[in-house]
Length: 178
View (cartoon, rainbow, N blue to C red):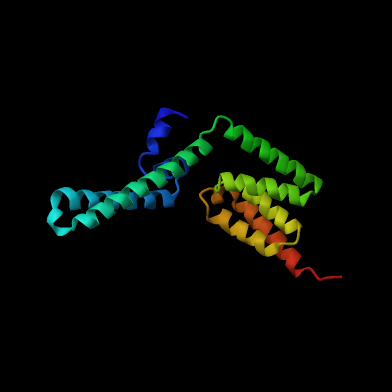
């Protein structure tokens, strides 16, 4: 792990915000800043306004918050900046694509869900998963994936494919059963 990646973990939420653009990381960083500022103000600026017990409990909460969030940040950074995470993701996508083309829906879905778990913003994997779900007759789940992809940062890139998948899913739903 790079030194800068390690130091980013000292501020809770920063790794998630910096490497993934995750708004939950921003919220975590903001809440930590508020808690830390409150602790500093209660200890050094207005110590007479907060009882010693409350200051001790407050600092305990700040340190616990910092330790847990730091541990989560280290875990996130090691996962995102691991030595072969990108090549593993590429291999997983190729495996999913191969299984999809063979019609092995379960194996393809498993690989695609692993990819999405690693990177929620992977538009390629989300689109393929939506198509797979449509092929396996799970239209509602396919619509949920398409909604998520459409609302994501890369959704505009996939607008034509999303519209096509929606049209195909609608054709499956309205198709008369024999």
